[in-house]
Every structure is written in C-alpha cells, then in structure tokens.
Image (cartoon, rainbow, N blue to C red; front, side, top):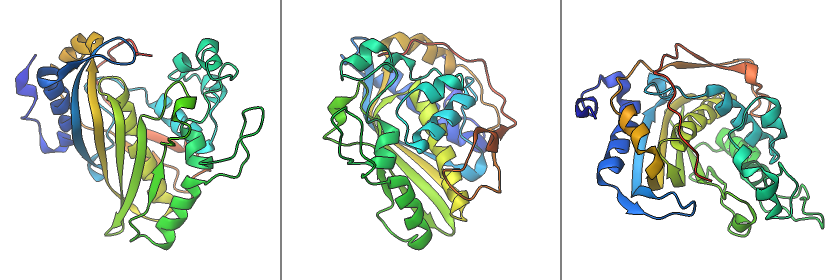
Length: 295
C-alpha cells in the first residue's frame, strides 16, 4: 500500500481523498466483527465526509463507478416503484441479488418485488396495506413535500426525508441502509446530509455518495438554487473481509480530476427527469475493481 497517496493530494481532489482516508483508517484500525451475511468485516462506528459540489461531481476516479446504474436507480427511487423490472429493462442489475424468488418468497411477494424499500418510503410513507400485500396511495409523499418546503420555507430545519420505517423494516430482505437525509439552504445554495446506518465502504458507499450528490443537484435545480455541499455521515462503516485486497489496490492509485455534472436546464419538476437529461463530463478513472456483494 502506498501511504504517500493518503494525505498529499491537490486541493481539488480533497473530496475523494477524504473517502480514501476513511478506507485506509478502517482497513488499518477497524475492529473485526461478525455480520448478518457471515462474511465478516472490519468495522468503525461513526464517520463523516464532506463534498463541495461546486468543485466537481464526486464520482470516484480511483476506480470506475458505473454512473448509468446510479442514475437509473435514483430515478427508480423517485418514481416510487419497488419492483426491479424498471431497472432490469434498462440493464441495471445492482438489486438482482435481493429480488430473486427465494428472497422475495420470504415475505410472500413475487419475484422482483422488493416490498417497502426506498421508493415506497420516499413517496408513500406510512401507507395502509391491502389484503394482497400491496398498498393504498394514502401515505406521505416525502419528496413532493420536501421540495415544496424548500421553495416555501428554505430556512426550515425540518427538510427531512426518512427511508427508515420501524414498522416495515423487517418486511424486506434489505432494510434501507441510507436511512435519512436532510436539506439545508444558505446563501442561495442547497446542501444535503445523509445518515447511512450501514456502510459497505468499498462497494456501496461510492454509489451512495454519487447518488445523493446527484439528487442534491436535481433538487437544487427545480428549486432555483445553486449547490452547496453533500455531507455523508456513516454509522457502521465497514470493509468486508473479502474486499481487503481490492481496497489495498485502490489505495495505491493516484487521483484524477473530478468530473462535472450536467442537467437539462429545462427540467423544473423533480419527477420529470429522464436518463437523457443527466450526464457527467470529463470522467477519467482507473479501471473498475470487481468484488463480490455480500447478501
């Protein structure tokens, strides 16, 4: 491992450098723990990373991150859907392991139906349930609500969306890992902070960082604001034991300039974005590093 890569990077790469420093900390100082998947982890409790969205879009450059999957997953969340058919039709496979017939049968659902995960909680939180297990459309549309609140009362300290519903957390194969996020407006800039209860630092967190940075840009645009910071706060921050070699490889790599994000400026409705409205420019990265997901 090249420890010289940990602290001496140019200022414009401080966003990604903070993530690499956390990887190094958990790899070298993390506590060995058992976990639900039986894989085992090195874990550290409590960490925070800050990303200045004006200085570049935080898509990691020390390994290639699949931006297409990030965009389609976020659009899927925003649609309120919890069935993977939309993702699979668009060539996105990141939820397949939890959508098998074996996994969904545990909750009396058909193959592909993930139950009350992110899209449901974001768009129909607390909805009443029908006899067949589907839901009435009588819950809280948290996304519509928070966008309206940002526009009408930007100084509010209640600009919060919760993905964690205690009454439904045991009704899904994978309860929401990124559990709650809050927006903050100052100097005409929108910032967002995420609390992630469970953070797979190597595989999951790079996706989560880019996803919520993208969401912040999208919400800022429809609210007529500039972007400020994305703050990522992690609870159980872990590296799976079978990812250690991959992490060590990533930490030897030098950083590239962060890319920039472009949104179609004509979109003024958070639910009207399509994949074609979103692009990253100047994304240069090292090759992807394959690793097995723990299910």
